[in-house]
Length: 249
Image 1: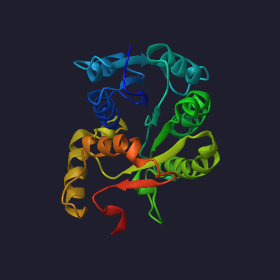
Image 2: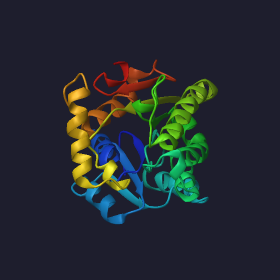
Image 3: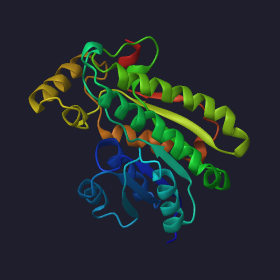
């Protein structure tokens, strides 16, 4: 298969991952999307002949090699790795349980570490780019009550972005981060919030965001795509907030 770029997107079945995969595919890139649900992955790929699907749990010890090997088999290279898969759970410190904390640490932090590590050789050969998807809620001195573990994993991912950018520059690999603000992805419902409460949250936040609205998955995907373009070659180690200016209010 001949494509302009070879891209891996984790969490590609819904939301930002879906929009990102389709954005790259529309540009002619070959895209391997990874997720736990074959149904949602198939929905993402429907109508996009450049998208391939891989049902896998990114927290599995053998997942990094399986993912990278599949991308190399399909496309012969890895030019872009988008570490997007994440899970969250709304709970105060007093109510946290070990399974929830472990799931967030493994999915949001450990999985990107080991997948990026496994992809290093391929990324070095292509002069590739790693994009770590965080959250604007973890930027600066902001807090994230009731979702602190999620925010902590994303703050750690931002630190990895800055550190890897320096560490991997001699390899010819760039590492950048995108920190979405409140985005209508349905993630709140998937984290256990009732649909009515989630809709109310989005409506309330739209009144607080200077842009006057919440974000869309396409808003975030546009920046993920643009940061991997050759024109962005001098951007390295940056974590870009895409949040309608909420994080600076």
